[in-house]
Image 1 (cartoon, rainbow, N blue to C red):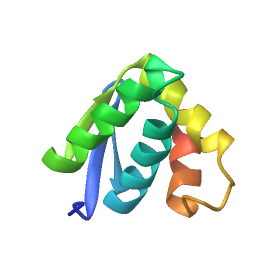
Image 2: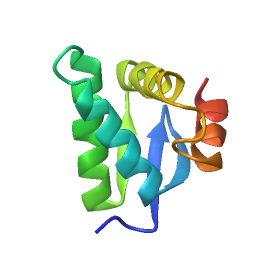
Image 3: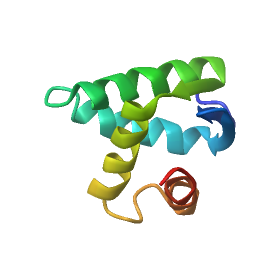
Image 4: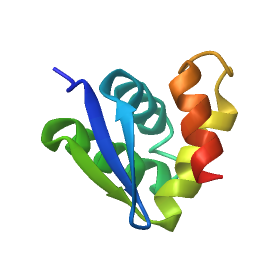
Amino acid sequence: MAQEQIELDFDGRLIPVPGEVVSEIASAAAARAGISQRHRDLSLILGRALESGQGRLGQGEVRALVAVLEEEHPERFGPAAAELRRLVA
C-alpha cells in the first residue's frame, strides 16, 4: 500500500508528493518502459520510493517525469501532479 506522502529529491530539493500520485506516475512510466530507458528508470525509482517513502531523481528521470505528465491527460494525476510539474520544470 502506498504511503500518504512520498518525499522526492530533485537535486537536493525535497518535494512531498501524495503516494497515490507517485503510484499513478510510476504506472504510466512503466507503460512506456519498453521504448524508453528513462521511463523504465523512473518507474523503478518511483516503485522503490513507494516502498521506502523517499526517492531521488536524476536529470534523466526528471525529464521522463515531465514527459509522462505532459503525455497524459492533464487531469489524470490531479492538482498535486500539476504542482509537481510546475516545481520541477
